[in-house]
Amino acid sequence: MTEEQLPKKPHQTAYNEPLTDDPKSEAFYVRNLDFWYGNFNALTDINVDIKKHAITAFIGPSGCGKSTFLRCMNRMNDLIDGTRVEGTMLLDGADIYGHGVDPVDLRRRVGMIFQQPNPFPQSIYDNVAYGPRLQGIKNKAKLDAVVEDALKRANLWKEVSGNLNKSGLAISGGQQQRLCIARVLAVQPEVLLMDEPCSAIDPTSVQKIEDLMVEIKEQVSIVIVTHNMQQAARVSDYTSFFLQEVAGQPAVLVESGRTNGIFTSPMDKRTEDYITGRFG
Amino acid sequence: MNKNVVNKIAIGVLWAAALITVTMLGIIIMYVVVKGIGVISPQFIFTWPHGVNAEGGIWPTIVSTLYVTGLAMLITTPIAVLAAVYLAEYAKQGRAVRIIRYAADSLSSVPSIVMGLFGFSFFVEALGIPMSMFSAAMALSLLMLPIVMRTTEEAIRAVPRYIRWGSYGLGATKWQTVSHVVLPWAMPRIITGVVLAMGRAVGETAVVFYTMGQAINMPVTPLDSGRSMPVHLYLLAVEGINMPAAYGTAFLLMVLILIFNIGARLIVRKYRKAR
Image 1 (spheres, chains in turn yellow, cyan):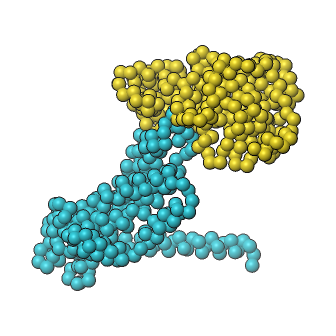
Image 2: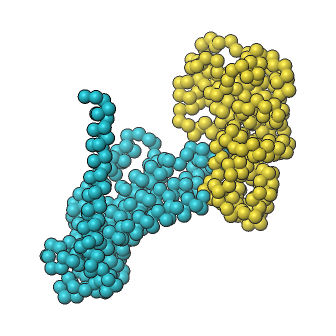
Image 3: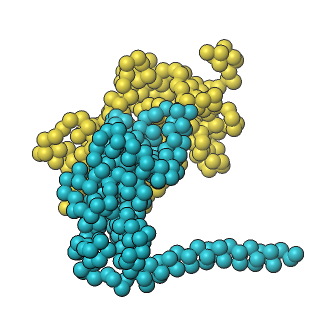
């Protein structure tokens, strides 16, 4: 607790739209969030709203803590020894770090896609059915329906419908990534976290993934970490810009708000420098 | 001395060392093949010995060897894999785990004659299990356990973090993740470890000599005794009654180990293809 008594470096996030007072109106409501890897304070004083039914992009140079912050949102950092979160992080108005919250249940509600497509060494069908089966769905007809629906929503059904018994590892990288998206959609999450989902795959698949993101955002709020400015500008409704200015010092949220505002008239000089490609 | 000359000498020495290793292996194999292949025939492989067990075939010893090795594998694999899962996934990494790992490594370096003596006095004398396939399989699994456990542990640790995260990200518990994703992913390497350990067990003489006996017998139940190929080979050679048959047995033993290794490769390849 001593950290809080020390005078902090004054830091102000710029918002082109005011933060809300109603946590329940947001997918995520984050206030005064700090994150530690052991003794290292990786993120400090993050205040942000993640909107429902919208796509939010996290941008910033490598090592600026945007992926770390993303993993705070489904408590994936709990799997790394020595990590710690302070502050408020509410999902649909409820504290996800509260007493009695089971991270396993949380991760069903907040799905995640990784940079590296990570299908399991099983068939396409079994990959998609993995989550529903964990939830106890055994009925074959019901599973079939869930699998088909998820694959359709992930823009993959047409390519694999005749081949559901093929190994999930035997398809192309871009198809694998869409398979992973289908796998997550099959458990009906409220929020989908995507950690640079397009950086390791072919352009055709990138297009398909961006299309599907826009198609499903009404049902699933999406947060995407991306290094690609054009992608952020193309698909997202909201953007948050993270930056670690000095090595060893915590990263901060420099600017956040509507994407068109951030890309057309950034309020902070550092945001402007970054999106125009002056650094990072 | 000119550094290029030093370089050339170093390369020469390394090359010679590699050559010696390969040559020795080649000579051993050639020697056994040349001396042993003459007696190999369907009669030698598929019939019983007769006389003072030095003439005729070696069929019961082949069956005994496969029987005891298979049984030892069935005993070893579940225990070793579960222990490895515990060590790699569940145990708090620290002193206790390091001690267990060190103990496993030490166990694998216990001389097999000592293991045989222990197997005899513990399984046969203390527990009263007859000298049999079962006693020998138990003693052999003491040898195999650390090999399978350590390779399995390495295989589990080599499963990429993002694969586990994919499972956790779908709301899986730790056990669901381990059993549905981590173990299938690690399976090819686990199989390799098991086959490696079986290769060791097939050639093991001292342990089975003490625990299985040396009577020529066709084992049916696990409590039947028998004579394994290495023991047969040892007895033929030490008594010098039929050296060609000893080399023939040695040759078949090596073929058996070769078949195991090729089998393991095929299984692993099939697994990789299924991916």
